[in-house]
Length: 446
Ligand SMILES: Cc1ncc(COP(=O)(O)O)c(C=O)c1O
Image 1 (cartoon, protein in one colour):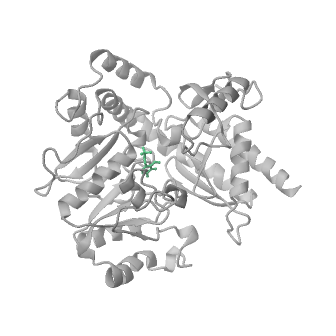
Image 2: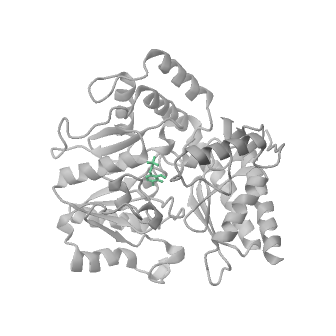
């Protein structure tokens, strides 16, 4: 298949849909002004809009459509399940897809200990469940999270987030007891150091300053961390940070919560991104790619005598039969080839992007793991000054050429294609990106 753009963009039907959307749908959605696709159907890495234009999708519904759009086996499994049982409420009754998925996830998640699974409908609910459970289990009330973090939109998750003030402005008071610390963001080290000689200064900030001056570690219930910061800019930390953090948490009886909402489910070439670092969290929250697009958020936790009791937390729709069926099929497909494809296609992206970076001064940093890759757009490599305007111009130029690409952070382009992408499809999209880079460069030099 190829990209095919038949109309001016957005096309006439898309324009009408966008106008109606702007009248009736909540203004609170971010949307992507640079890439206003009005999707009608999708297959694999291809999305057709309402005017019949065919786009190549490097965003996968924000890292959700892991098995590609409408994978035929996922569609069939969901259709079959819909004909049998759509809802029963796992809060009060039992049904096989939920039990099967809980068993599968408990066995899949890292850690040689008993695990259980809580079912919600979204990433933020998975985080909210982790927050409540961490308080319950430890009897402590303080939390640590990171600048640049994004954990969701409910009040608890929002209080943990630290990536943009617009997420919080006007919504206070927030949850008390959250301390934000610097993320190991080596390209923009908060301490002006380089990883080779930093002695993990950002972790020392926690252990030597925060824990000694303001926050007694024995009050801390949990540390929430994204193995790779997503909305914050696809920031991949060094492995030793994650390993040391695990030690610090263990030393103080603090639960380590991995927010794998975006990194989870094969996107980094492992089922869970923490496996790349050899780290075993106490709780894992995951969602997005787990059910190939059906709503599902889960919290997988180490189960012991401090667990919560019947009635303490639940969700009517969470883990409904359709979503659980889609997730079971997704896991099966990931294990039988798609995850291996991530490891094959990741170098295709990395090598082409790194070679483009040699020719284009505006590509300050190319980083990531698996098919979660960020390119930081800067004014020049020396100053590293962020260039959000150029990033947005790049995204818009890609859209005009039929490539769906979105940003994250202030100035980062995020590459998060469906995990089924072939080398040929990757190369088509990367070629579009290269042309868009040239176009914005020409525009910039005028
Ligand atoms: C790391 C992370 N956590 C939590 C969330 C919230 O997920 P949801 O939008 O499904 O509530 C997101 C969404 O982007 C995310 O990237």
